[in-house]
Length: 278
Image (tube, rainbow, N blue to C red):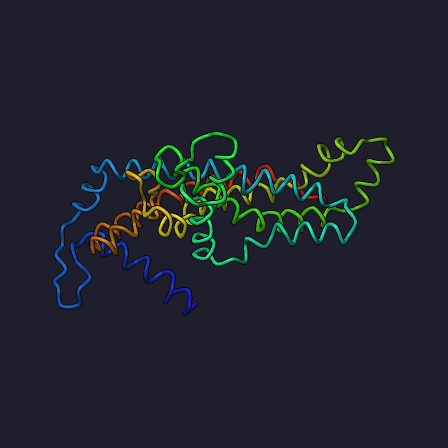
C-alpha cells in the first residue's frame, strides 16, 4: 500500500492539482493558480484534436497486429511438433526482448530512403524509394507496424498459454463427434479464447498508443507535420519541451479520464462475453 500510494496515487493526485496551475518546473518559480484555463486552452488547440485522432488510428491499426495475427499464430502453432512449435514461438518472441530504442535505431537504418535495405528492395522492382518516416501519409502507419512487430511476441505468448490451457477432453470430444479442424477452432477454441482476446483488446486500446512512444520519439519526433503525434507524446511534449507543467498535467488528467471510461466499458464486455470451460 505504501508503494502504491507513493508511486501511483500521490503522483495522480499531484497531477490533478498541478493541472490548475501555471508552472515551468523550476524549483524557485512560483506556481500561479489559473483555474480551468489550462483545460480550456488545451481543448482549443487543433494539435490536441489531431493527437486524439492519431491515438485512435494507433489503436485501430494495432489491433490486427497485436490481437488477430497473434491469435492465428497461437492456434496454428499449437498442433505442431514440440520442437517446431518452440522454434516458431522463440523467433516470434525475439522482438519483445529487444530494447525499444535499439529496435528504433535498427528500423531507421532499414527504412532509410537512400541506403536502407527496405528501399533497396523496392528500387529493384523499378519503383521509387518510399520516405517511410518523412512522408506524413506513410509515417504513422510505419510507426504502427514497428510497434506491432514489437508486440506480436507478447500477444502470441499470452494466447498460446490460454490455448494450451483449454481442456483436451473438449477437443477430443469434438473430434469423436466428427468435427473438422476448422470446426474445432470455430466452436471450441475461439469461444474459450474469447476472454483472453478481449483482455488483449483492452490492453491494446489502453496502452497501444503508449507503447509507440519510444518509436515516435526516436524516429519522427512527432512529425512530419504532427502526423505521428498521439496523446502520450503530446503530454510529454508539453511537460519536457515547453516546460509547461500545467498543460502537461491537464493533458494527463484528460487522458486518465478518457481511458478510464474506455476501460470501464471493456471490462463490462469481458465480464459479459467471456466463456469458461469450468
